[in-house]
Image (cartoon, rainbow, N blue to C red; front, top):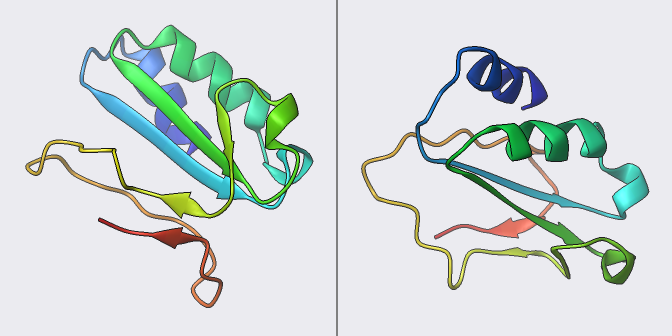
Length: 93
């Protein structure tokens, strides 16, 4: 994910970009600081993070499993989903 965001930032992309991530804790979130920095560099990007524990100390984060309710990315956009195949960390829309 960070590599894709780095490419978008380096090329000056203005495309709408959503970064959605779920993890056990903020400390378990690989490249968390880098991802936040890259999202801030993109003019039309937003991020949403969910943590099973410790979300209260992390600005803009939520506690629990990833939940797409209330999020409505445009239907014609491409999506990239990454994560463990056997771990139910999200509910997809």
